[in-house]
Image (cartoon, rainbow, N blue to C red):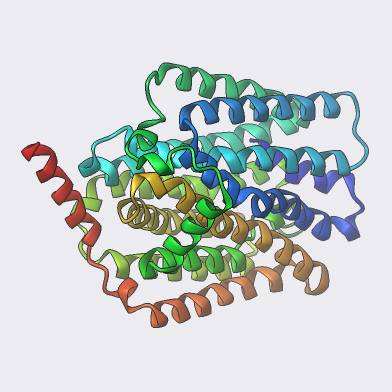
Length: 400
């Protein structure tokens, strides 16, 4: 809800000739803290209790959302407070994400990790369907400030869920060598970097994620398409913003049942990103609401398929004591791609128009995907080695 509301809010506060650039600046405000804190946050997720760390970060994000609500409801006429609060929330989120993703494999048996990742994706994407649609309705009938207020309250549910996870969040510390426990140092961060860039599969999935989302991050321009191209208003904007998540939910539901039977996982990963780029290009050319909605839904479905396989490869190929640092490095790629892509899309749209910006982004996604696939045969030929590791883990557990 807040992600959609911020873009809409910014588009209302600036002159029409500056909207594209102002929307791109939202991405810059969000990515700055990610680039600044990604390495230290990954080290924190490996050195500290992950559950306790999440309790702190979720509380901070609740406070920041509350401040954004109060500021807006009391009258806001400048975009800079939005940028500042969005940047602060991004800083808290940069510490939250490595701890949250690294916590998931410790909550389920290793042999069920693929399905756990799919179910986690369904949970996130379902919220992404309901959130923007509800946010659009609230903006149309109430005030954008109430969207921020509801977001602030929503963090209380996450905090309550964490409170119920007693005893979780520190198994990686107990399983780490004594000399490495609580190792909150630069050297620990460099160990994470070396691990990632010496693993071709993990490295290629991160690069694929970055370039695909960098060139195809058209979400920042949705307010312009909704207002100036499709003329559908706030309610239509809410549905367009939710369309990728709707496609993602449907794809996730299929993947929960199908993932164990898929052998050519690397090939399917590459082709899903190709579909993502094609759908983005068609979206840029569309002048009809329902075609645009369908293209955005396809991007969400394709991105979900690739996300599940990327996460599965990385989680299975990374030891638990290194998982937070791996996710911290990955955060630069998978968050940096779309956020910097929003800035690139805004600059190009300001120069050549939104259609050229989106279509060229789809083409760029296709070209970079082909380059990465050609340079990384391990990715093209990946047939579920992670599944083999899962089976070995299950056998070891049974023997134990």
